[in-house]
Length: 64
Image (cartoon, rainbow, N blue to C red; front, side, top):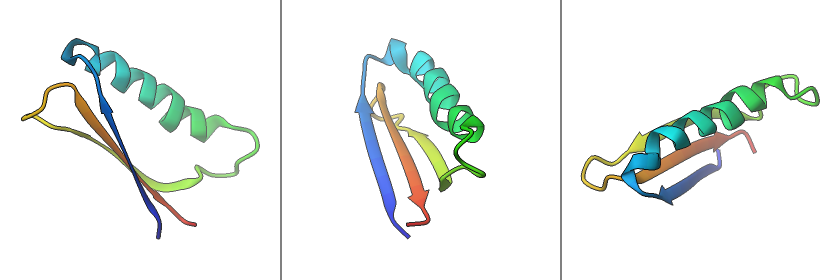
């Protein structure tokens, strides 16, 4: 299965806003698209790096 890793660097004060937008667009947004019967990715994880404030990694597992 393909895995996609996206790493974002931002000011630490913007992380919470990013997490809300990510959830609204990728998680809820994908679930509500009329052209999909199901969410097109198998799983999604969001990782925060305590040693690097402001770094957010988003990991997707795709069926194909």
